[in-house]
Amino acid sequence: MKRCYWLALTVCILALAGCTSRSRARDQARAAFAAGQQQGLQQAQQLQHPGLNVTVAGPVKYTVVPWTDELTVARAIIAAEYLGTGDPHQIIIFRNGQQITVDPERLLNGEDQPLQAGDVLQLKP
View 1 (tube, rainbow, N blue to C red):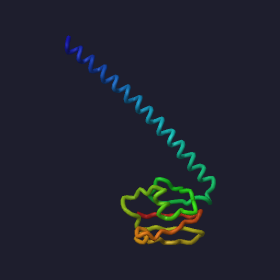
View 2 (cartoon, one colour):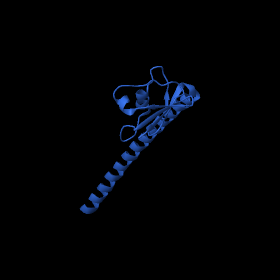
View 3 (cartoon, one colour):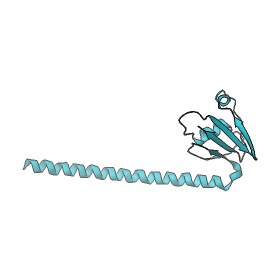
View 4 (cartoon, one colour):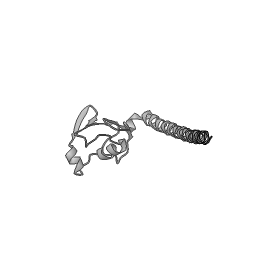
């Protein structure tokens, strides 16, 4: 009889624990969905004005960064949330059909370069 009691009690505890986990998972899924919708809305708004953005190609979380007068290569890399395992080995700015190479060593030494609206910044790990 004791064995059945403990078995029933264990099953009840596991069932209740499962309900709590499902509820928490459902709440987390809702929060993630809402965050994704917000991020999608922001990106859609940025894409409506492509000339006022800088596109960042390479291992980054965000490929579109809103352009401002103060936007530089380093600030764009930070805003795009660079995901590479190490520093980029090659950084190239594409502007009006021209290619501008940025030396990563000089960038790390504080020699930053301003970006213009519509630039494409390519990062190669």
